[in-house]
Length: 186
Ligand SMILES: [Zn+2]
Image (cartoon, rainbow, N blue to C red; front, side, top):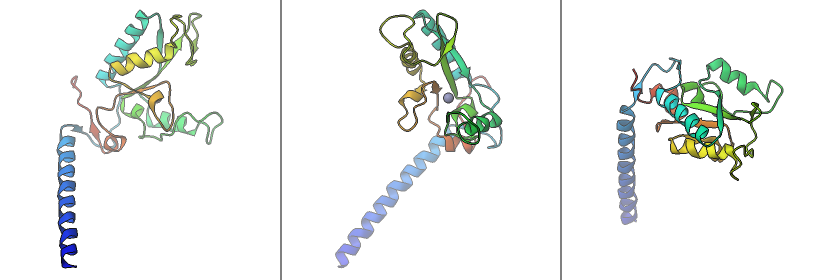
């Protein structure tokens, strides 16, 4: 009986110690990020995202695909208006994120569509305008992932095919606390 108690206590101590190590590592890791007042809103797309979007448009254009960016930075009001769609307002649900819960609110996400050969903006993920047997939408996603974006089409819970984001290792909850990715232009 005494042996068992000793055994349990030893393991509890070891688990506690490992937990503390993880916590310490996590805190030190967060220290490498900038931190601003959590109420400070972001006013522009992050420069790294902006640059990657430019490269994405160029590389797609080389494949005879015209990418159109339909949405970038979203203010709190715009996010709430979008959240209302399919809920208080008529339409389909387009987001599960409320204000402050989307990477769009931190200038870290964009949405794309395609301009087809007739000059129309389309959201047809099967459209193969360059006629190479691959859907243009997925070709764009592949280029974007090469450039460091996460693609909403890979999300498991809610597929968001037009969505591209760069998290820089920051979760939404960390962004809400005011942590920001490094910004070389500042
Ligand atoms: Zn999006």
